Structures are given as C-alpha cells and as structure tokens.
Length: 152
Ligand SMILES: [Zn+2]
Image (cartoon, rainbow, N blue to C red; front, side, top):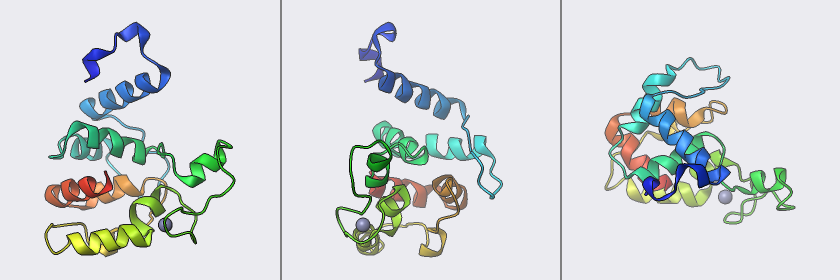
C-alpha cells in the first residue's frame, strides 16, 4: 500500500502516516508529558508487534496522537460548532470518549468480553493525554490486539 505513492509526490497527510509508520518500525515515539513514566520504545514496540493488520496500527497511531476527527477536534479546527458526541449526545467527544467512555463503546466491549480477552475496565481510565500508550503498557499482547481491533 505505501509503495504506491512516489516519495516526492506524497501529500502532507500521507507523509505524516509514513512518518508514523517509521516511528512505529523503529520503536520511537514522543510519549509526551503524561505523569506516568513510560518507556516509549517499549510501548511503541508493543503497538508495532501487535497481531493486528497494518491499517489498524496506523489508526491506533492516529488515536495515540489525537489525530482522529472527533467532534472536539473538529471544533478545534472550526469544522463543527458542537463538541458533543454524535452517538450518545451528552458528552464531549474527544478520543478517549470515542474509544472508551461512550456508552456505545462500553456496550461493544461488554458484548465482546464474552468472546475476547480485553483489558480490564479498571485499566481503561483516562491517565492523561497518553492514556492509550499507558494502556498498551499495562495490558497483555492478546488483550492489546483485541482492544485495538475493537477500536478500529
Ligand atoms: Zn458518546
């Protein structure tokens, strides 16, 4: 997929994805300012080595960098007037809400727990901007892979 775009003609967003993939491949990442101490190399390796399709890893990398079009991000970019979630309608839709807190995400996890090993609900807490990386650091490889598939 990545080989189809000539390097010199790549759009800025495509170059961003390529850059993200390079970060994933080489185990480097800007872990940010979370109060939780993380070994960034280890966490990004956990994501890179997860048994999920590459497109899921790219999506998760976007989530980890607050790069998905949530209502909060659309408002920040003046693309929307409302920050509230379009599914549940009563909470601000940021990445954590969309992926974890929204009642629809909770219901999906609840249904899938009967079939898949997932991170515990206690581990699905907002620990700061790096909540997803903190979660990856806490969970088993199987739980990580299953949770990432649900996110996608
Ligand atoms: Zn919601």
